[in-house]
Image (cartoon, rainbow, N blue to C red; front, side, top):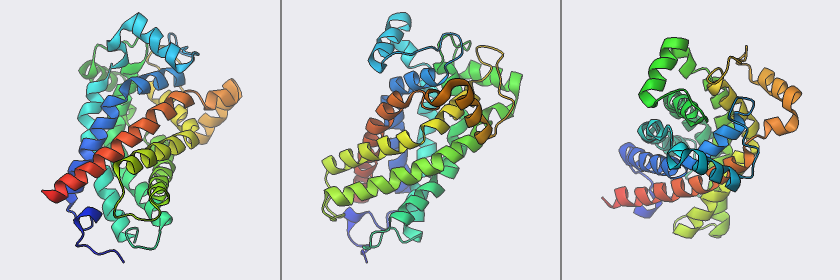
Amino acid sequence: VRTHTNSMSYDGMSFPGFALSGALAGTAEHVVMYPVDTLKTRMQALGQPGQNLQLPVLRAFRSVLRMEGIAGLYRGVPAVALSAGPAHAVYFATYELAKEFLGGNVDKYAPGAIGFAGAIATIGSDAIFTPADVVKQRLQLAHSPYKGVFDCVIRTFREEGIRAFFRSLPTTLVMNVPFTAVHFSVYESAKRFMNNGDVENEGFSTQLAAGGLSGASAAAVTTPLDVVKTRLQTQGVLNSQKYNTVSILAMLRKLYAEEGFAGLTRGIRPRILFHAPSAAICWTTYETGKIFFCAG
């Protein structure tokens, strides 16, 4: 069993230390990768005026720059910058405490405990992040009718009520529970594999590669649910089209019937391009933060 005296193992680190490391990591990944997330949102919101970005990612990126400038790629970023820190503080601190409780820190490899700890962690985090994600995605749309974050919050609340900010929460949880379980278990597994089982002396390159692989894997398998989430969060913004259900299965069937398999995988390339580097950034920032706060 791993001891709790080795500072490089991070065992026994306090809740605030995990929370601060997580807050830094979450803010870094979302702000740095925000332009790619904007492209992903627009691709998934197809069927609304101005959203038809059926282009390769690089061409779509150039198109937005040409038509809207750099500001078009960063509309809504303040909502993420303000919410990612608290959400990821809860996310990582809960993960570390749940992993310890479930036995994920023992020498015997326990991917099930790690995955389950990640799934637990996402519940509280999503409750914090989902309202900000609604605002962010509505601002990311081409020809968005909102002037900024505050205007979007006020108008959405006035026109649709508080429910609009949490309408997609069930879908988000159904998506993020398996996403996080895959993400965390692949990350921990990849680190062990790349480092020949030596979990005490992993390097920056190992964390970077394992983070990228885990983010890409989790993003790929949960893309259909992410499409449903985007449609629910952006419905009615640019036209009167609204879905009369929040049932995930009903939404998946409707999308498949109307748009085929392609409709369920809208934005999969920018989604992977977002989550692979963002997970790499997030994990390396988080692990570095843990070293810093342990040393402090």
